Length: 338
Length: 78
Image (cartoon, rainbow over all chains, first blue to last red; front, side, top):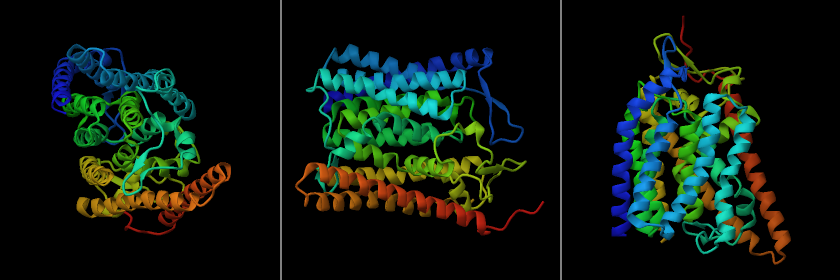
């Protein structure tokens, strides 16, 4: 895996540099176009530039170009391109939502289209993408496959939407995804998955450059374009590289939060239309869990109930620590799958 | 905020969820392999999977109701 790792490192370096160069210009451009949103968890709700997903997308695209230059149209690059196409569908949906707000159900339904590039490639070239029968630690390859095929349309949309649902505080999404993709790169090298290794390393480079812009206090919000794109990349990689359980483990905090939100809301709902907020912001910026029975249950609300009132940066630190826990579980899963 | 305390309990919850998924799939595999008819096996698998989802959803609602009805932490006074 030396050659793919080297390709991944070069692609990551290109992605990192492009984000560092593009981000300041893009921030100025988005601000000049009035693409800003209030930061709901800060006193006075200051306006912050939105749709930072565009910066991440440009970074990944440049890294992908470097990958093409280094490897040509190799099988691993083509797989990476299919994953990127699937994620680009979700990025497009997110960008439309960033510029012109879509309904919760409409947005989720449109992200299901993210599976189309993967499905089409699997049908046209079954040797390139051999899907089905995921493997689990201890159990090995599953024999029960019906549930897999039923859940397959959600393989890209599910991760995309759960990452989006947890993108509520400064730095959570790039912070947790940085841990997730670093772990995925390590596991891919361990299990010999070339596409996942290169794309994960590329994402590590891009997110390392982008993280300071979204970290507390954020200069840019990821927007749905950023969170849907990152979640879709992880979901797409899981399908084409047979890393379904690893991806599920890495997304456990997001999945648990997403499940709580769906159950509390009795379905998909745009967060701006929620009548009662799960977290209350005190005038000094301290976050407090709502005690209202009507407020939805979220992981942040639960964390504040367990740990007590806290500042935004403390809650983000907690989420990154939690992501490190699930990263350890993902590594254990990979070890048990050998 | 007690970050270490919150991290411990949330990590415990995530680890339990991870283990619960493995155990559930393991027992589903064991149980369903006993049925020869693929249609029956598929239907039973689907029913059990949905039952598990309903159970998890009910658990979320129970926790939400308890948070709403109990003062788990002292309210801040104005």
